[in-house]
Image (cartoon, rainbow, N blue to C red; front, side, top):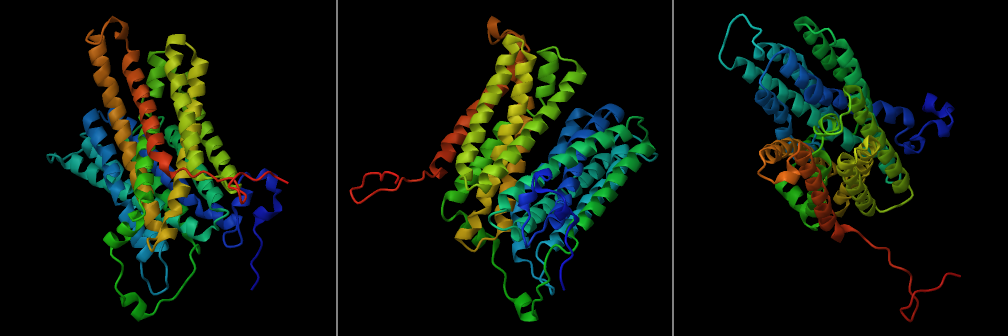
Length: 473
């Protein structure tokens, strides 16, 4: 039976930025539908890291330390992404699905965590009739852990499924498109949820958060529908012993390339993310920018990230080496943080906004290219793609959470010492703490370049019989 053509085929290719990401095995309609899981993950991430963060501190009066602990809980799940990916590689079912069951259960965990979260937060904020010691903290911790498990499981299995269906030629463009959809999910949900919670009340909080849980579940159901082929397995195949995680992990690291690449992902992600909670305060406190002006920073960063994703997809599609492109992203990051640092003594807001955009641009190139490099690792052994993607996600998510915490703590500690005069008269300024964080990020980027260096491959020039380079004819 012939397959009905997708409505996207009627749109000229120049109006679809990622039109060349489609292939015969993954048409554009199915690719866009599959990418909805990234919209769901982006929405849940904004709820956990942004919207509910503010609600707990401002509207519910929860201590900032408790809020920080709750937000850190999903990060604790990140190291288990490698195990989740490995389990999806080796999953056995009667119909032969591997990724879909993990997408499904990840969706349930994500929805369940968000569904019970508003009630847990209200109890945590003291809005309860019966007082039970630490009930709010326990319930909130469980809901954040559930949502975190769902996010990590959904994203790991979804990325693996997309890479399974993509061809080697279209895989970089597919990854870039999935990143774009993640940004769209974060940006759109932040605007919508912020607008819905403009008149805060307990009932509205419950409706909005539980509504987000339902929307996420619906998006994931649409995304996973008929995305994985049915490959029936016999009872003997299902009963056969599975590979051990330790064996697959050893196989992944056996060449030495995987361990170095994961170290690069960890260090580079830390370098690009330590400023996550500092750019807007830096613009307001040091450069004197208004609240409306500093909110543009997110748009600048997102625009830069989108440009980085698009450029990466284009260059990788032309056969460029992802490792060398990662080096380019790191160099852009060094220039970006330098621009942010110099914007303070020069009192140059334009330089500051340019630096924010370049941070997103360099970080986007680095993320896409290191992910593409990680995806090629299983080709060297029996370790599956889910394990490799899970390991990349574990390194990236763990480094991101750790970097945000270290960035804020380092800025506070240094500023206390600077304002007390312990660092000298020249450094007695609120800008000192920010500057130390940005310089630390530059140092981490240089360290990342050093670790990445041995992975960079040089294309050798053709040589003749004498060993000298041949002249083109």
